[in-house]
Image (tube, rainbow, N blue to C red; front, side):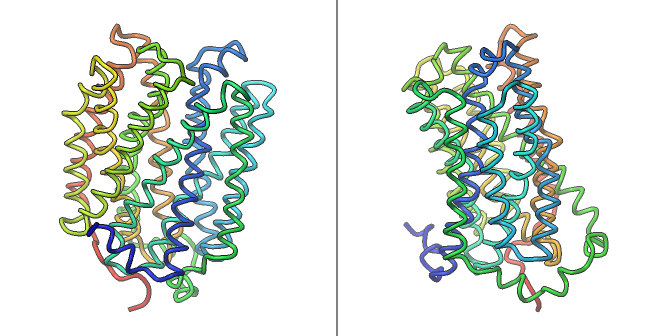
Length: 407
């Protein structure tokens, strides 16, 4: 396929770097999404309301800016590669520890710590990949990297479907330690970012000095990523609960797995398509088109009426949601100065997560206070956020194909 040609043009080391960055985000998302499949099971075991368990999602998202800032600054100072390996080990270990939570309070604390580690991965992987490939490949690779997120969701759905009835929710979190094995691959196959090596002196400046003249950009990127995260989490985090409560489809059933698989297949398709499209029509225009096309998909997604139509709706809504997201890795990295590229994209992304962290809890609250339940809450949320995202993207800057490193 012609839109895959940028991948074929990468050399051996560049392909390893892209694959490692993709797998890092995939496995990070896999560990995150395991919780969304077992909200009901955890609430039953600890004797609490489901809304209380959703605070685990909130705390994970809220902690991610801390990790983005901490690991991002370390990566700008010591290199993308070693800090990425450290980060992967930490989020895997915190995932494993969650399996042994004796109470909801301990589980919530561990999800917060997991969020710190999770917050570092996206920025490190994205900057390492974007700094290692030719400018003309960024759009396609951006879509591929961001597609790691729905791939992680799919893996979580698959593991939940196959194993939850046999090993329970605690067993799922034990499986979540496996991403630590990725470190062995990174250590053997992935080189350091050539742009970071070229500009090491610049990376040793303090954050305030490096960000001089770029604070307005940072604030804009945080607002943009708030809308992006409300878009993504608003369409995904409560979807398994919607299937259980509104459609009465058990979480571990084959039907739930198929619907979730269609959702993630749509996300993968959208990320690759719109990421590649952004190379031709521009980053902002691709984001706006994808965001606005999500709105007419809402009725089919939430009110399809049959499993076939609901499956089609799940596929199409995520083509648009993750289509818009497929542009994000390259858009944020192109807008960021060299000296803070390890920090700013990830920090802006995760600050957006912090500001959007209430999404699942807010949707749950609206559903509890409105006769339409989760279907109404999720529909309203996505319609409003899609328009807001399109507006923010259109009004912002763009730096497509900007050169990284020293001129």
